[in-house]
Image 1 (tube, each protein chain N blue to C red):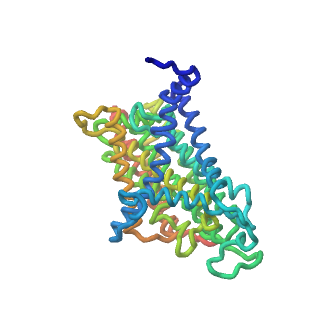
Image 2 (cartoon, chains in turn red, brown):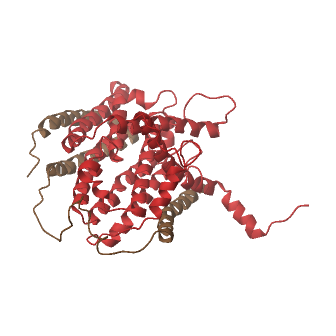
Length: 343
Length: 118
């Protein structure tokens, strides 16, 4: 016996299973971004524990204490969100959540295969850069709005750090655009079918990767939130849901920057074919495997490097990465346009 | 069109995520504020009232350097766009990048001696 569903239910099912909604809500959309943020935190804790000869999360959750992260999130939600007396209330409340929104928006333009991308644009790489450039602003404002001297010092350090590493990031990105002759990230990945850009632009990759780690404020570039000297710096006044929003924003941004690095330099979804696995699964799988390698490297930095001073952070950005970025750009343009020039 | 729809759905869902966090906090978190709780964090010291003091900001010259480099980066980017459309102008861009590479290396050496506290 066939039961006819009510028309409105049929419409809802059609909407939920439509290509647009699946991409936006499940993969590579909201659910994927949320789960990835949570898993990144768990992976970092387990990996660092192994580096330090500890077990890490263990008790909550049967496999490797994976439910510990969920428990922590619930704990943050159930803590009182205290707004300090000297804080600028509206900015203090809204900025961490705006930061989370802007970081999540980065994933709208990052492809996982030619099909698995939320919004493919001819200027995709520029759109991503716009969100990379805009996303620190709410976090800087959050530090300023806290009305604390620790937050203020942390916020100034954060702003100087972002200033120093945004330009190298942009210059390295330009090298990729020259080589692929396109602003579409899918075309950039397809330009690496035979050889990934990490081989032809190794200096550019180094500049981009270091700048990305700094943009995400990871060790050794975490001076703005230095626990020992600035007691969490610009985040110090945040607790409860505000702290959770900032942490999620930072991890989401890190993940997005690493997926972007995979697409720009590591050949994106191009990898050896595995018999029996269709391309629709294999391509995102290769992107994810390459992302995991980069993520492991970034998390290992925390285990093996010390925090470097502000002077060194700024020197690295202004005095080393910018010249290296320009030299990389010069070499790339020379190798690409030399035949034209000789002709 | 499907891509554009997906972007709209994703933007709405991304905007909803922080809202859901706030709603979750409203449901679960206690609300018993007091003057003592709202005092700024003082790292173990006794909180004190508002005072004003001078606060020298170091590394400010780098903020000025940023303005110069931001314009240069934009010029480079526009040149690259021009070359993609018109490969005949490649020589100009290669020359520009050669000059910029040399001058940025020179700047790297001279920035070392830049006084950072004004």
